[in-house]
Length: 246
Image 1 (spheres, helix red, strand yellow):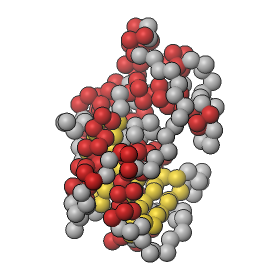
Image 2 (cartoon, one colour):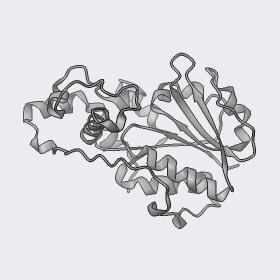
Image 3 (tube, helix red, strand yellow):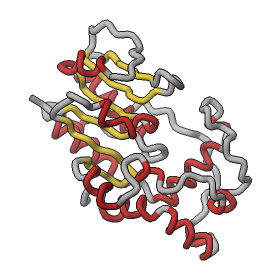
Image 4 (spheres, one colour):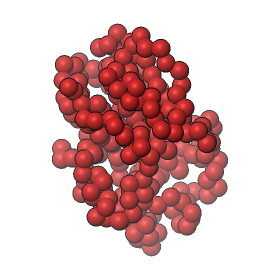
């Protein structure tokens, strides 16, 4: 029995590309797809998206116990655990066996800058968090004590040893290896599909056309960077020590 792909969608780390490309490859190979979307009952945030084989009658399933995944387990082709669902992963994947878990990440400085640019731009106007950042410049945001530090590690653990243990079964890729992450996923879960037939140009992607000016970490005062590195030490540990080798 093939493994079930489980992708952890870390914001601003190429997740939309990974999900879209995997969806299109699976759609082509299976002559279409159906989908499951699980929402948190309290705030209606989507916590799981799941692609399943076509011709299954499905509605949007709203669960706290995630029974719908187990109900359709034999037809699941791909599971995405969204950012708001990562802390719930043990409940989500309860009784889902033989999984292949992976995620893509980027340098924490670049990720946080990308998130800042997104939330403060019109590109995020459909998001609940749009306009939630009041700092006018990214350098000001970096010095704001309220910004989310070590965001990735906080989804798993704030203790390094526990973090290592929780991440040991997750295949972690840097964004520059995003194509390898997809290829490795299909080799493990859908070995009958040749991913090399599908390049980036064949993926029907929505790309953000707003390109804000980016600053280099070298352009930020040392005292600000030193604080940033300290506040994001665990995310840098993941980025530097836990990623798959090229």
